[in-house]
Length: 408
Image (cartoon, rainbow, N blue to C red; front, side, top):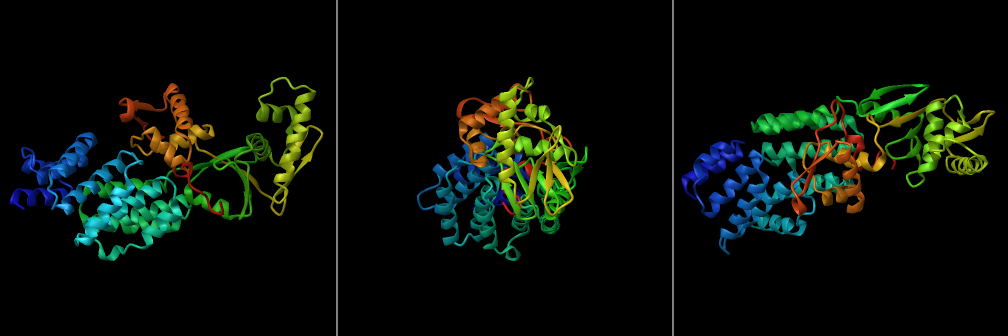
């Protein structure tokens, strides 16, 4: 490898893509194409980066398996950054094995981290945690240790384990300083901001206030009866009654939870659950049926008692009832889509469907609705179309993402 290629590679490792391009920008040999592709990725031109890396992979000879494998890993990282989560996972795994077999442990480990980060994005937390535990961060370079701790912090935040998340972020900050790569330091600071921003609203006794992640963690560990508008469930400690497939019942539970300890008039419940403006006897009969169903489902946690005006919650073994709601009220499907987009990256509709466990058509309907409301915008056309939105100002979106809360 000539001196210019070596110098460009060192510049990229130090987070200096412009310095790398100064050395190889006019070259079209395979190593230079690969380094140019990585440099363009660091500069944010992902489409050009992907083209260059594919050209480099074709240009490397049949005996240069390690170089081709490195191109596959670099292209997978671009796909991850551009939220193209449907990329060829078996190809990345094959590249990882090739690198490991030929002694390139650092890049093999980097490939494994890409797989773990993908698992985190699509909400497979248990699988991501097992894969992360199999890696040995003390033996890795500072940049790889930073990525390790960021992934660990992401898993902890999604599980609402804020103490573990803070410890992981502190280790990530130390590793980022040792790596001396400004982009990594900025990424750690951005991740740490999640713990300081409001993540949810607490509605109780006719008032409401914003909660941070640690406050939500403490609330769910308390003995309070929580009507959870994130997961459409009623919960207390480790007992969870899911109403995710019963939207009418959850609407009734939320209305009763917001009003507790007062009752809710029948007309108000009809409006919340059925959208009925003028209630007749058929509406009232249906309300009685649905209240009966709700009463049966949440019996381990609370009763639903009739009053002169309507109905009220009667919690069991607790004197506190609260509603945990999103910081910004959006209906469920659109909220989940907006939460993914709120990381500031561009997503394809197929990647969103994969991350949310929904059909691509369902996701597309939500995107069209959000676009009509001016909350998201698309870039590109056809298969290259991506959706973006600026982050919600002043709010963290961790709780909006498709991952289980404790005891789910």
